View 1 (spheres, helix red, strand yellow):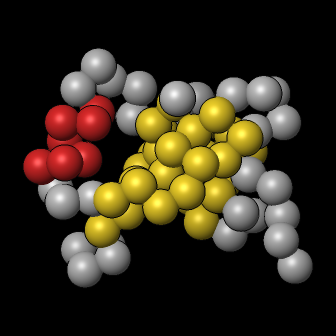
View 2 (view 1 turned 90 degrees about the vertical axis):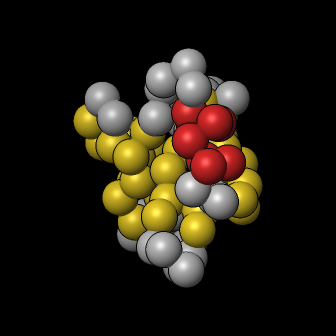
Length: 68
């Protein structure tokens, strides 16, 4: 069953009701995602109306969310 994503605490996103994801709000977040070879896999709209892009690198087991 699909559950909505929501922010649990300041920089923690509960992604699809299952996975805890760090929210990177720094100005160079995309630089680090590219450097770690992470790829955009999803865009999530939260109940508050805020949108987050989800970046992943499954080979290194990395995941983060960046506000759009």
